[in-house]
Length: 413
Image (cartoon, rainbow, N blue to C red):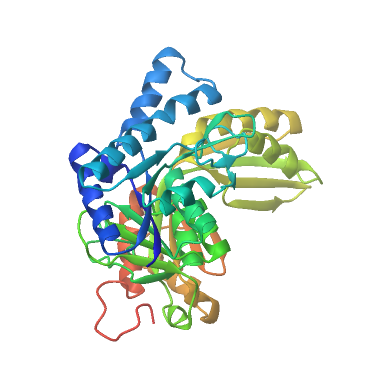
């Protein structure tokens, strides 16, 4: 007998018919002898609907009250699932975040899990019931409801699996697993059977939407294997696990892209200690994430500073940077929201040279100019003009051998 935590996303529980299908899958697993804990998201589109309702009243609702509102989405699905399980002859007990409890800090809208006591969940399991946990939500020490941010149900599921010492965390979604790139852009994309935590973290941070990055961080820290699967068929998915030797044989595991990018350049900045902090501290205080940063020194103790931010934060970031530029005596601020970031990821890069030059050459041969470059041990990212995004993805996918490889061949070699 194994202990399995299964998480089902919004598309998997989009209506009562799909909730019943999930109940069929879960109860069949119970019949096979495994203990199952279920974590559910809100119905597809429900969180956006609730946000829109709030904004009809107040364009920028208080974070605490918005969390109270958004947490109702998962309350609906866990209750309906418990009813569907009862219909199939299985006892199920629903748990909201504060009932588990999933204890978090007080950062409303982006709370981080601090502790998950397991007594209530274990008591339900020992009684032969299926615990059904509301994803995406928690509770502070003061008793306030919090939410974990977009994709937070993935984090809930992995954290619950870790707390319970589960054998496996299964993430059910509307795709069959992790692909070498977006099949919507590149029909030759292939499902990856096994991927390392590090590769998955990089792919999640670079635009792949299959798993939320914090869930992968949790899994890597505690060695919890994740199986990403489709809730609409029984095909094997992608296992996210610790790196092994076979993974290093593959030079590039995937190509990712993100269109949620914008570039800001501050020209003729005084080249003095503390100036970078003057620019980036107020951006950080506004909870805007800065990604790539390039500094070009000019003559006469001046420098130009270029960096990227999420396109959704572009207007706010430009407002902040213009104010700071005036304060520090910079010449001008220019912005470009029409960019994209394309990246290659693979643990095999650690032991192979020349990967960057191959990427740059491939883009050049297709007439794609590189605006900015960022690297780590296992990824290389290039900022390009947004209109070349799909061409870049397909070209890199083909060049690194990720299109359907011959049997026995190691992609990317």
